[in-house]
Image (cartoon, rainbow, N blue to C red; front, side, top):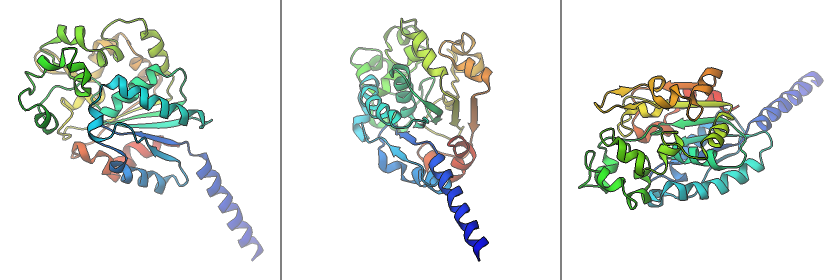
Length: 288
């Protein structure tokens, strides 16, 4: 009986240590989302990593997610920065869709971060160029080939979607007018690039998740830093200029063995954070 009690005590201690040992997880939602869309993902994490502090940041929800990304970065940076200060052993970031670009901005501009795993869940990391239900609903007269007339203006850059709209047929206009994605990916020189790169490569693990049946991110390879050339042929990540030149540190992370790509078929854009198999195969491992 005594041995059984001691065994249970040691087991309880081990479980408690495991629970305490998990780093906090911060989730940044995407376009037209909010915390309520991520209850399943938070539940998955709690099931496999009991005791984990999981927070989906409640800012710029729903229609407010259309606000310019630099404005959103300010708000998210204040919230995430406070959480980082309270997490002495660091945090994990899961960033969904547009939220991936918000996370890029936060990490670029926050003075010091302690992110271990940075997980981009179906994010348009190299930009967006394609007709989807998202854009047809809000821009019924400006779809695909015409949206640049709006996006590549001072007014257009006040809409989050335009901050990552990347028309491969309007390259010069994109580089001249885009004030967000082109800066983060080092496509345009700016005085902060070296510092931003240093902060990006200081993460411990970068995890990219996406797939061919996403239906929203276009091309879907944008989730893996691939994008169209002027002929709308997809150029894979390792052939992109920003990778070859290591403009913002992507090649460095890859060379270190700290870049993970998880391609998953059969998952629609709005289902990534609801799919337990995606979580088990692509996310769980990186939340220790």
